[in-house]
Amino acid sequence: MMGNIVKEKLFINGKWVETDTTHKIYNKYTGELFSEVCVADERLVDQAVEAAVYAHKNTLFLPEHRYTILMRTAELLLESSEEFAKIIAQEGGKPITDAKVEVNRSISTLKIAADETKKLVGEIIPNYNVPGRFMYTVKKPVGVVAAITPFNFPLNLVVHKVAPALAAGNPVIIKPASDTATTAIKLCKLLEKAGVPNGYVQCVVGSGSTVGEQLLRDERIAHYTFTGSPAVGKHIRKTIGLRKATLELGSNSATIVHSDANVGKAAMRLAKMAFSHAGQICISVQRIFVQESIQEKFLEKFLKEVSLLKVGDPLDPDTDVGPMINESEAKRIEQWVREAKEGGAEILIGGTREGNIFHPTVITNVRKGMKALDEEVFAPVVTVSAYRTIEEAIELVNDSKYGLQAGIYTSDLNLSYKIPYLLEVGGVIINDTCCYRVDQMPYGGVKESGNGKEGPSYAIQDLVETVTVVVNLED
Ligand code: NDP
Image (tube, rainbow, N blue to C red):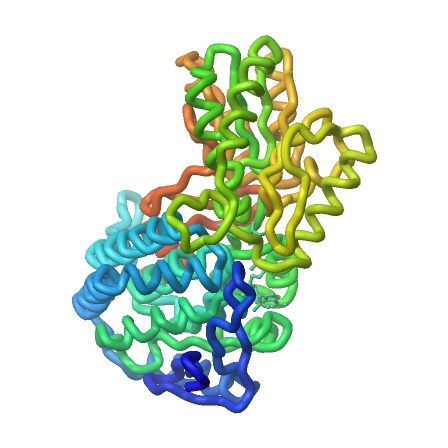
């Protein structure tokens, strides 16, 4: 304990381990020291993998036990939800109202994953052309799982990896984003209290370039479940060879507002979802395409809504937009907006920075080649462009190296039916923005947005091995 700052230990093989090297985590709004977390060295990471392998081979971890642990963790999280929301608001800079939503979603993710423990069944294979053989499949855990997670949902994105891994019966090693690692450590405390067997959940904190790299190169790890940037996702693919990975990566997600849409509703919701968590959400609304006949009406309502957003302290329940994760990220987006302006774009609102706060920014007259349009902004910046025909809008949405989710506002039933087949994305949200996710739905992208699906009942498919059994019934 240093002043009122607690030194958070690492959870390795059922024990809390203190190390000499620590990582300081700051309150993203005030800049004050928030917590100090122990950092794992090479030896500790190795010990964690060894303990996970041992647990996998030697512990009888039955589905009923997994169910009880996940449900108990959900109960414990509910009891400490205020505490978790405050940690997320301080170390992650997420407005407290959104942090509370994240905690509630995490409780729900744990419960959904618990139910999956009851569904791990194989199937009988029909043998209509092979008399004398009985064939069936069984599902077994894949082995040690490494969960590498980002800063922006420091609880729910850890739960989305840990809970399905446990439900499937796998030991999981968490490597949380260093900047928001307190939340992951606190989650381990709940899992310990819930009775998780030694070695089944461990947490190793340290930078991606050290701890992350070591995990990637350790051949004892069977599966990687990663959420983060496309650059690191590609690096993981290259490094792990034939071992399996689920990759949830970035995007420059789009929403179409068609001529037959409810413009008022669309404008209000888009203003909220383009700037939620300061735009640092992988499906944040980054590109809005509006049919030209309603562009003026849309912009008038949209800009009014954006101007009403309250920027400030994440702990204030009235705050809509908090700080970005650090000042260098805020400076990066300031530069991207400046470049867009120099290239002919028009800033309709925002464009200013104070420290790591970037004010909600709407840009128009953007064109291909501008980073603010082509790359993932991951900041409170949105572009608005007009289109003539729906075919043109679809082309604009698809003209991206990413493909996570897309939204469309329309009252046309035929278009609603057809559009999921035409957009190159992993999820289509009709009459809401692209920034929509609930935890039971299959979630994941195409192109550089990654591969594999999250949502416990989908994630678990990659976390079990299907073993085929053939029984020869002939003497
Ligand atoms: P990063 O890719 O920078 O980091 C994600 C995690 O990977 C962190 O734990 C980081 O560690 C670790 N890491 C970094 N380098 C390596 C490496 N060489 N080997 C192994 N691990 C490594 O992403 P951010 O945390 O900045 O998160 C933002 C990104 O995440 C955005 O692109 C966003 O779109 C994406 N994202 C995608 C989501 C989805 O579901 N598709 C959801 C949320 C975010 P450390 O930071 O400690 O160095």
